[in-house]
Amino acid sequence: MTLMAPVWLLLLIPVALLAVAYVLMALRSRTAYAVRFTNLDLLDKVAPRQPGWRRHVPAAALLLMFALLVVGFARPTAEVQVPRERATIMVAFDVSASMDATDVAPNRFQVAKQAARQFVQGLPERFNLGLVSFSGSASVAVPPTLDRQAVLDALDRLTTDSGTAIGEAVFTSLEAVASLDTGEQAPPAHIVLLSDGSNTTGRMVSEAAAEAASRGVPVTTIAYGTPEGVINLSGNEVPVPVDGPALRGLAQTAGGGFYEAASGDELQAVYDDIGTSVGYRTERQEVWQWFVGAGLVLAMIAAVTSMLWFSRLP
Image (tube, rainbow, N blue to C red; front, side, top):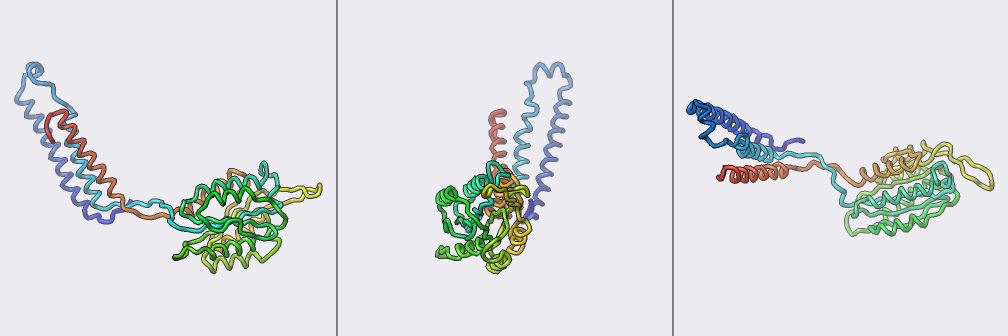
């Protein structure tokens, strides 16, 4: 926490002096009372029972109120995360045959779809969200929209096919972002690409990365699966290891993040992290109202305890 007007903290000096004065007055009063009544046995019989610690509660509450109000005037600020009001997110989802590998139970494809569903549901409502599926080619399954259910339904309809066109997936996502007409300044965009294989067809990944970088659209990539992944083709087991270096290079060139996930839990954690980074921004905001509010609460406590215990206002 930082203060925008720390000079107001000088007012804490008189607050501290008030606290010292109160303590001294309380001690003097106690001493004078003891001197006036030296017969303690008689005093115990004729004097009413003293309120003890309760008599200090109103004064303590008022002093704390003054201190909190002073801090409030100093305009404290704190860093808080607030949702981005507008953005466009394109999810590029690999539907190549290698996603049928069972190294992640029940298979990569089903677990990835479930994690993507949770990612979609967790994004801020004002985000435009689109879906691109890619295998041997890439196509827009859902153009950028605020309709979350449309994206969820499209995820359910995805099926696997042969080939992996990662570069085409990026170009198709960029075209979908460019086609969004909001009638105002275009919102910031971000591509989240999940794949488990190497680029086997279409334009090169390096070409797509350079294009994304030139348009200022970050591409975050997720390498999903394990090196031991295999699929069954015509009765033969074909290895389908993850190509992490290619996806890492794409993310680095395009200014996004790179993640590796080898299980369903890891993949969900990746999506949660991406959702936090693209869904929120850190801002420094004034939090003086919390101190003023707490000060007013303490003022009410001082008034109520004084009236209830001593039948007077502090």
